[in-house]
Amino acid sequence: MNKDVSRLASNMGKRLIEAVYPPRCVLCKRPGFKQMDICTECYRAMPWIHVGCSQCAIPLPTIDGHEVKCGNCLQKSPRFDRSLSLFEYDKGAMTLIQQLKFNDKLACARLLGNLLADRVVQHPADHPGLILPVPLFNKRLRKRGFNQSVEIARTVSKRLHIPMDIHSVVRVRNTRAQSGLDKKQRRRNIRGAFEVIKQLPADHIAIIDDVVTTTSTSNELAGLLKRNGVKRVEVWSIARAV
Image 1 (cartoon, rainbow, N blue to C red):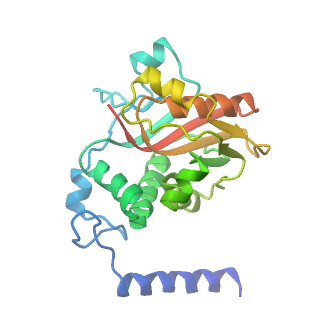
Image 2: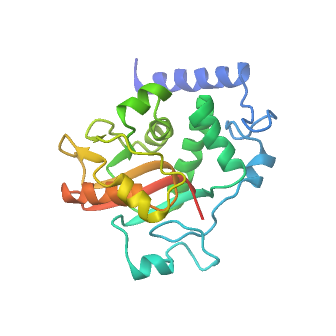
């Protein structure tokens, strides 16, 4: 089958699925829009980050552009080079992430992956050569049945045509949950939690995480990647805690 025929068949298949199973908002069940599982009202009500620190993505009270750094990053630069995040970790964003992580609502992963891919495309920058979802420890992965960062990254990888790597970096310690820990405790908790077990096939990598709180996990992973030859590390997340 030539490429044109294959593409036509694929597009027809998508239209048929959309006709039989039209998109529904995962938050309120009203009809979705733009083939996404979110309605226009809920989309507009999401706690979007319109301008964030270009390095750590924390929301900033400015409309001067997207290449602005916060005071913390100016004083002490993190190990990663650039970040972007969709939402403040509040309201609808919390619901979508919690529905995915704890109620197995994988439709939320597809929606969040598409929204994240849209945001990446809006930022004029060289795309990385590899996407790296934050790994889960094997015991936690078996208990949950899936890694939410991997499920989000699948859609981003497909949309942006960037390969995803889930084999080169593993989590070697079953760390405590970061929630409930302060910044210093989070740094200690995550230290040495990851290990590179295969040569990384790119020198520009984007880490994908669901929520970035104090950047401890992102910083630990970025430092590990750079010690193993990666030159540039970005962090793409769904939500950024304020």
